[in-house]
Image (cartoon, rainbow over all chains, first blue to last red):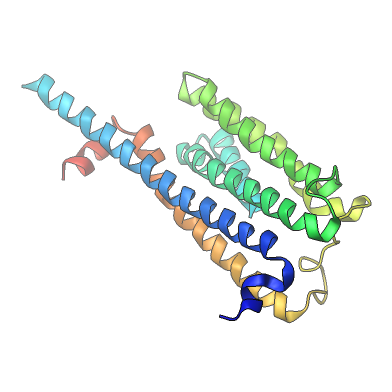
Length: 56
Length: 179
């Protein structure tokens, strides 16, 4: 890549933070969604184990 | 994307509220944080680009102000849902606020036409030929498609979690977890 691309016509300090911020938002979305699902599954599994212990 | 995610949230909330279909509330709850994060990204990146284009990071311009209200609506809906100990009441209250807040969606969209604004007028979503040059239009449309698919994908993951949380005592969940 040439320097002209990275300098974005002199607007690099505005353009690249926008890309960074958007990537951060995308990464957070994936992380938070997976975390929500993992926690929900963990909670459901725990409830299942507790129910099995109660029965025994 | 911020407006689309809000519309999904409000319509899903309405389905849950009117027809008492539980998955409606689950979709609304799953859509809210994604839409809020997209709104935040729109405001922050727009503000960054506003500095070289308009000479300021922020102005109390109709488009910017209505989009900020959009973010507050998202936060309000999420906070209201979390404020109730009874999940059912939280869902109903959040759905009601989401439906009332839906009025802001066309206001955001048409704000650049209705009032004098620093923001450019509609360049893509207008009848007839878009005014944007094709060198910018196609990247924009492909990004729109990409972000829509990303939204749908993340919504599905969140929805799985929401359903598991809400239905963890149901027999089918126990069977699914055990297998």
